[in-house]
Image: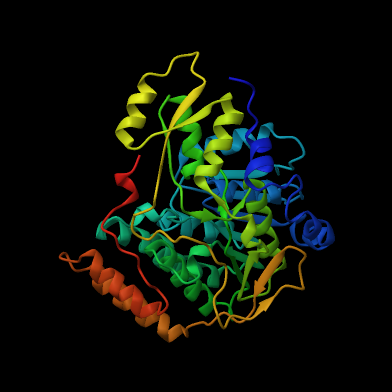
Length: 405
């Protein structure tokens, strides 16, 4: 195998950008960012994941005085720390503390009480995969993490208010067709209901290329294990690099106004299919020619026959038929007021509809009551979510991504 640079591959074949999409905005607002970050304290929740860690790297281009990172992934925090300590041009503060804890646990409240308030709080803890809606157990856990715990965090922040609070969303919250997207739309409703009491922003953005657990990340794993590549051939997605994802969130967190939803200015012609990226990946990773297989079984048999001299590699491309899979992406919906003039490469949703605090109380009461029912099923949860998110049109096929390679 020839030397493979993942960052170079992303720039050349996925985003097709040598320079960050947000380079102009970062340069234009550099002094504003420095004023709000240098010498300040920051708390990053879910900081060991791809987007959270990328946010931290963007943050450490400046000079915060204190950085605490919370994540349930202890190994991820260890690697994050090694990466930050090993990287050039990052300003890791002396008061840097990674904590392997859950932000919904009592010990987190102790940190807020004893170490807060923080100037900057950013929350990246989320269930982010469409595959996490396979049944009522996984959906309940997703709603708990993405919605219920988000409100618990907001209540804590009211007692220890930061100057900037950011909570990540997803493009799948715009006209959602899966529970993950609908849960993030509900999260948006929750945080917007608090935006008159806290300075809160969020961001919807594209797929993060080769993010942890993503299909593209799986390409790396499959190659190391000499297993076939598999992807849908008919699903198009927007992509940003991991670096761009962190920059987008930092710009939204610091420069956005309370209640605003930020998104990247990307054009439809910039969308890519996973199968086309797979073909480019095979060529650049090991100078392989893809061998198209008709079934998963054929692909696995051919992978078992690979030798060190093989110059072709088995792939299984298929038409998508799993629940909650949207054929295209969008960042805003009809009726939302869009400002495209403030930033060079960011759009801003200025008037996103928001529920009242009373509506949020009712929503949470119904969710918690439903989750008390031991006989609950997926359809009941989907129906209740649809009551809260009127434009939620769930695509149910009876098949889960966990039934795919």
